[in-house]
Length: 476
Ligand SMILES: Cc1cc2nc3c(=O)[nH]c(=O)nc-3n(C[C@H](O)[C@H](O)[C@H](O)COP(=O)(O)OP(=O)(O)OC[C@H]3O[C@@H](n4cnc5c(N)ncnc54)[C@H](O)[C@@H]3O)c2cc1C
Ligand code: FES
Image (cartoon, rainbow, N blue to C red):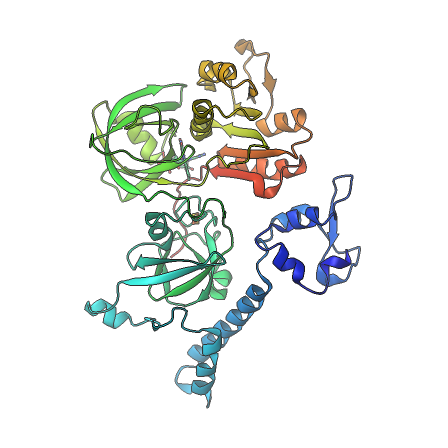
């Protein structure tokens, strides 16, 4: 336990790891699974222990210098704000002190100055429209137009940053401004970015526009995926078929209108559909694979009674209609880890990207031991049953386990029952060798994120897409 206290070499060693994985790796996990570790700074007071659940909620470990850099940054921000509030009655010597603060705010890109806050020049049309944004600790630099969000600009340049809703609501893209202040946010929810965090320097990349050169610390990133992104494209598609596969799930197939083009994507990724006549988009994951019927894209879309896109799809979209899409986005893709077993856990329309991953495994002959747990309410909510059962013939180590949470007595159901996470808890007791892929409605994904580590899945090996909704952001 003493290893956790004092010198910070271990921090460098475990850089980028989740705290829960660090303590597991260090052997500070009790055999009974109720792992508790002392808070390092509390000097082993047994009354003040962290559970693994606490640790999982902490941001991943950064290099030691990152901590002091952040602290300095916070101090500098507070000081600058106090000076701004003091206004014309600024204390004597404030200018000198401000200039001393340059050491916490060095020009990040040699040869360039901070374009910072020169809004007037910009609006007059002679200012810079592009700025350089550097991501740490990965050392990637991109150019960002002022009218694009940083997340979008990164995706266009093939850089896959962690994200979820892209609407400022889920906090998956939250990052920290290490250098540079001149950032403006589109509307976002203060649940995702509370005011005090914004004051400290946190930002939501899916809502942030850069108005000067910035250095941003990514709090959450996947080293395997970050540079694997395919540049995003805009494309027009024609509806080829629209079929109900359950009472509220539509299997939509579209074809790229330009016969010479193809939209490259990795199985598990998604595209954004524009909602016609509205400044809105909705994300939908491809259910097919890039190799199968090139030029065609398949989706499984849930119809919500008052849903903006889904009502439009249900009531208006007909075969032959044109729709506009942008993509691909997302990092819910199969990681190359041949020694690991695979656990897929899905519910509702979460079927789509998992189907894509399974179909691609079948095409590529990936015979890793794999189980797909799919949760539905009643028998009438199950879909693609035949295909999933047939996959077991192609993939000998594949098992499909559907479960009903509210089976009807007329269903004649003799399969698993209960919430899908409870079924996994019941049937699996050692997932220490497994990679888990979770996809579906947010409550199901959150329950799975709580459960899987208790069954042994390493936090870093849980990959998920939360189908977050697009309500109204409550701020900005
Ligand atoms: C990365 C990603 C991938 C996605 N992939 C898919 C996919 O493959 N298939 C798919 O069907 N959806 C998918 N979604 C969700 C999809 O983008 C829309 O949010 C969803 O279809 C609702 O859009 P809407 O315009 O019909 O409803 P909205 O107008 O956004 O919402 C209308 C009403 O429906 C409710 N509602 C909306 N979504 C949900 C929900 N998930 N659970 C409960 N209530 C809800 C809202 O609370 C609201 O009251 C994905 C989302 C993300 C972030
Ligand atoms: S992706 Fe930015 S808040 Fe959800």
